[in-house]
Image 1 (cartoon, rainbow, N blue to C red):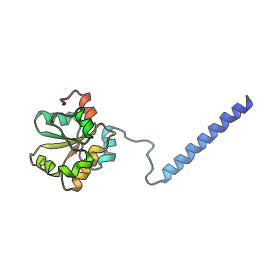
Image 2: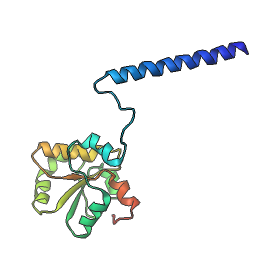
Image 3: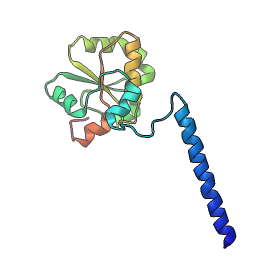
Image 4: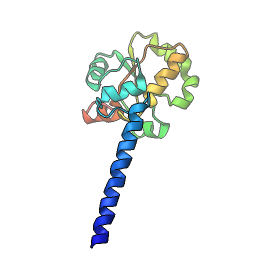
Length: 158
């Protein structure tokens, strides 16, 4: 029984030491992970999207109802064919270069272009918008909550 107690105590101190060493290294690194932070959908998207303009599903739906929104689905074609926002155009990140003229034409309509992917943890829409921006195409907003946020609210889909 004494050996078990010693083993548990030894394991506890090893874990405690590892946590302290890890925390010290994290604090010392310029790009350390914050211990406390804002993990809301918009904040997480800012990690991916940086300075891009973001829009929530509610505001995107208002534009959709007024006929002022055009959606770009950045998910893979299989995910897109499984369901997407009504009228959305599928432009996976890896094929963005093939759709530059189409996106330019969409921008000329004067409507708001909104890119989305699966959910707040999906970086594809932000990466697609960055890629298009590097090609001189924009502005395009990013909807962080994506397909999941749209469906959770029961908005129109195909």
